[in-house]
Length: 241
Image 1 (tube, rainbow, N blue to C red):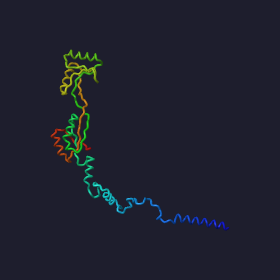
Image 2 (cartoon, rainbow, N blue to C red):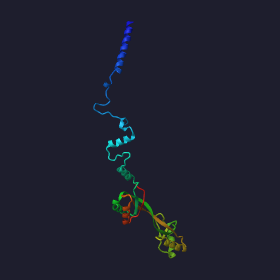
Image 3 (cartoon, helix red, strand yellow):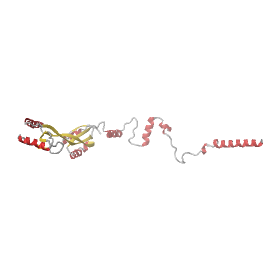
Image 4 (tube, rainbow, N blue to C red):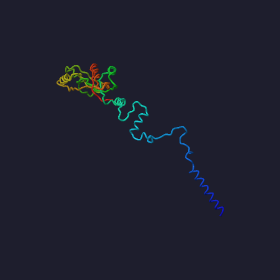
């Protein structure tokens, strides 16, 4: 009985000591989460001076020390200028100059207008240009047949023809290339009156065109327009870039 009582007392004593070790320590002895001398970090929401969004924006602008920081209720000329320059939108006059026949002509115009433009870019496009109106006899089935047709033209007193031997229309007989469509029609009608199935069509080719797009340095583009008249360069309005 005595041993049992002694065992119970020892157990109770251990429990009391353990509780004192866990709960009885002073908070002053708890190890700090930061090293000595290092400031403790605080959330922005814990700062009383940043309780409302307006104060937070103003304090952020002051703390950052940036000259272009924008405070609500105040205008920022530098910030607005940066937006306008990047977008090429409000207040900008954008024009396309050209077409130029060569890159050299484009480069010369760009150099002459360097002082009148805020920025510029060059581009190349393909355009279809007429080479004239072609009068011809449709292609024959073979080279000997084409030569025989040419001999019939000669027998009829028709000159100025050429038998095409290569390209995309071999064995065709060319009867002339005319700048004026009226002259081409006259030639075709003469051949048809002589009994030949002459035809005419416009010959076109793809040629490069060079354009210069630029943004006027001044808002209204008055100086730029004056310079364009002096240089004799064609222009039209275009989208800004």
